[in-house]
Image (cartoon, rainbow, N blue to C red; front, side):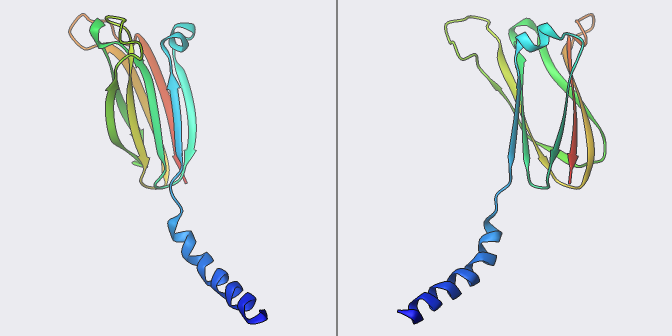
Length: 141
């Protein structure tokens, strides 16, 4: 009986370092609704700290039927990269022309700080510019 307990203890001690190889990245989600932008129309700002391999999901209210769409520019260190960008339809399918959301996935790829400036615009000449803006500072450690 004593031998089995010692053997089990040794197996556990030897297995712990291998388990550290299976640590997954952390995901951070932020979603900003149309109401959030209406309440604060000038600009919304968030700061995030993530690690290399972590993902930041950003969901912003968007209604392409009005001619508006989000665009962004990155500055600072190349610490994050865009992994994906998609549009999600409104949850209530019975609302014709209702707002959905644009969703970006950014991944931490290197240590540093990246600034992302996002603008909700009508892209054509004479279209409305900077209807809403969103600023993100991402520090990758």
